[in-house]
Image (tube, rainbow, N blue to C red; front, side, top):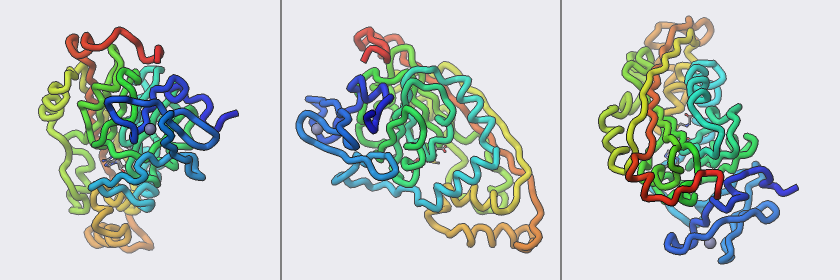
Length: 301
Ligand SMILES: C[S@@+](CC[C@H](N)C(=O)[O-])C[C@H]1O[C@@H](n2cnc3c(N)ncnc32)[C@H](O)[C@@H]1O
Ligand SMILES: [Zn+2]
């Protein structure tokens, strides 16, 4: 059985070679443990099952480190993000999915998708996402053209990651959805009050809608999911460290700041509640954007 067996997007030729010209798009096909195009470009799978399509291509973005991804995994196993996962599973269709900025693949895990293309700049992230069934996990910069054919997916999932709306609209099949999750007002307020978080609390909803609308994506729905959990200082430190703060401080430095602010010692730290608030925005192609395309569904490629 082929190393990449069961990945519908690959079997249908929907995954494109990034080194061939966009004006003459060429599909990537599996050959042993590699992906190859008919022009002879070849990308080998890493031992952990992911494929790096960025070979020879530079990016100005800094990927999350292995320690940051491990912190994200600990936060996710704390259960704080579980209600968001449940809400997303209720929303996402069975058809092929693009998980844009997949991280560890936490949200695609357990989803009954026909196949998943999981993209992230961090190899530490995609090596985890590569363990999921029917998933092709690629190291890729989301600000570059997404290596997928037009209309290839029934849904795009984009959780706390860069939103390349023009590309999301291009690869989305008519009738499909782009599901974007951003931090809602009050997200991790308790951690922000401690001064350990870096970066904005989130995109303004109106700005997100406007950016989507420019590419022919109209908002079909918006909801807020809230979760509250009693956490130990270690989880709070992970929450900060897995975000932008992780590029500037060590986890130990962040933990020390939390303990100092709480007047606690590492031996007997009190727990404290933390509230996560997520905004889920769902977009579909407007009539004209969808009408510009041939009437093919995501399953027909
Ligand atoms: C906040 S994490 C969210 C990950 C995942 N969606 C989750 O919620 O668990 C942001 C992710 O986006 C990735 N990322 C940031 N910039 C990127 C880019 N230009 N292209 C691809 N991935 C990027 C990071 O490596 C990181 O895994
Ligand atoms: Zn090629």
